[in-house]
Image (cartoon, rainbow, N blue to C red; front, side, top):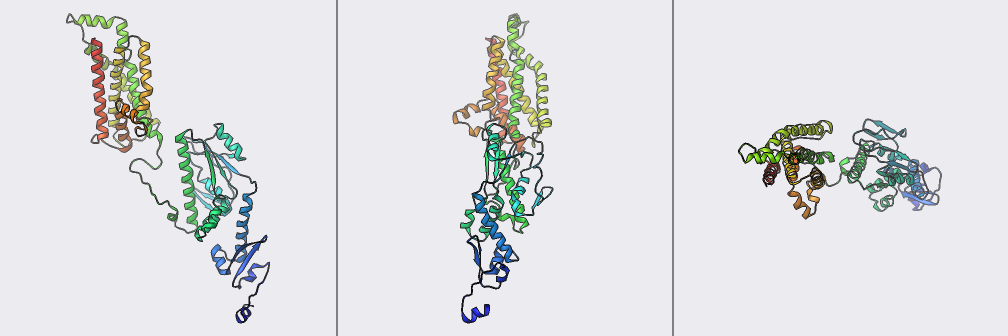
Length: 445
């Protein structure tokens, strides 16, 4: 028949249920349910779909046709609950399909229909706990009720649509690829009230999918760098997975040391004044046998300094040994700064003790200074994110430059030769002198 068609220049049309019988034809068309699925040369179709027989090509085309039908039909969905945990490892996803072979951290997809399960393996990490839900409403309800931090919905058409979407891109058929975009999407609802947790979830979900696609294309003998974004991030300091604890720890530790030292001296002069000891000391000073205000203050500094050193070392021990906060710089520099901040807190306590006349007033002033200090010193709220007015106020606080200095030592490994570090020491010493002078002047009045 091929010879007849060539010699007599006639067109011959054959309809058959046995597709491979038409393999010698110049062009074949495949129809299913009244719709033309493909029309091209047999060898071209085999090459396009990577098959060895026309029956396999027809099977692939039939499966692709079913994707659109499934999209309009209610299907069973798989939802996941996200819970962020500090260090405990996730218990897993339960039993996966037998068509997934898991070997350590490597997941090999044996059947393209189960790509969603392969992706979920990459979410079985320390920061995410996955739990199944029967439908989308119950999953989002858990987020609304505060039982979960997020909900993920993977459509039943995901695997087939994603594969078809990639195929169309490689075949330079972008219009057909766009049609499968919605079917291959993964929907995620997050509770954004906790910014840090939401950022961690977004980061790990995207990173998990990136790792998954790289491993899949490697199995297809395709260079994974083709799927890498054109922007490449490299760290100068820190790691690619930053921990908020490392950022907040320097400021929190200095704040704790500072206000623990304030509590040591905030009531010292008040108690002596109320008991009459301070007045008798000043009266005796007039007869050259008493003590001066400077001597009284320095005597308190020397006696309370030992207690403050113990408090400081204990706080630093918990920070490094218990909470595992990173410190790539000199630990000696951190200890010295913490001790200076403790001394600064003691001097600030003397100012409070000299100004206030009753214990309750001193306690109220101490507590009232705590919240503005921890919020405006850059411990939790970065200076760059503050309004200009608050930023100006922040620079005038005794903890701001010290926090920046300790953070530079611990996270960047900087030494005293860096301006961020030595200005922290200079500012702390200046505040010690200011508080001590103010306290002495007030006591002498």
